[in-house]
Length: 346
Image: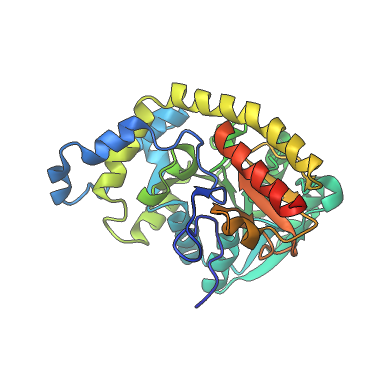
């Protein structure tokens, strides 16, 4: 069987008590979402709305867009694969490291991959060095901000320069903002009215700890593209429970996210300091997770203690020893640090 490539694989191996490999909101699923799942479940006997009309209106209001700018899907990966299936790009530009599903979707659609390798000396930041790699033979550029697994954001002025170049060359640009809600960076949805080439990917997965419900969406002012993507997939690709939970999550999203960001702002420096004191090289991160390098293997020793972290050795551009951990509440973070201390020092 092929190795599971992502975080969250709690289903094989030793039992997992705390999952640090999935970068979900430390508050967990909102109470309103849990209520939406259990309240009047008989309504899910009916087919879901194939147009997701109420959900699109709610997402549009949340982002300050029009409902016509929104296409919901069965998780962000649904949109990733559908983009490649419909656009059929011949060459796709990716950063390395970054989320592996971009490359997999491109290869399935028959595309050639072109990598821009991020420099460890720059803390794996995306810089202007990317621009010369955006060449006329590229059909599609993927950018993730904050990047997965590094947690580095791409500054909005640089995103604008990338969009300018893509617009000039007729290249599709997709920016994945699934972790941007934790970063405090202005969303690049503000660029959508200016760039027809631009699409922005987001999801409920990380923001609202709704990974099992599978709900993501693509935003674009290119409504013809959204129509083609909608027609390029199944009719009822967003389930009734997912639509109901998405609506519930957005009703009180402001206070919920503000509380989550306060936790992350307090815990990230504490975790960074403790990891560094244990001999880890911790790289800069603006996301709800930390990316670091360990002098010794950590995955299996921690799994034996019931703790799951993300080994990043299968990312292009990385090797053994790189890891990513989600920032949890202080109590859970203390458990991880104590376990790391035992692994490293006995």
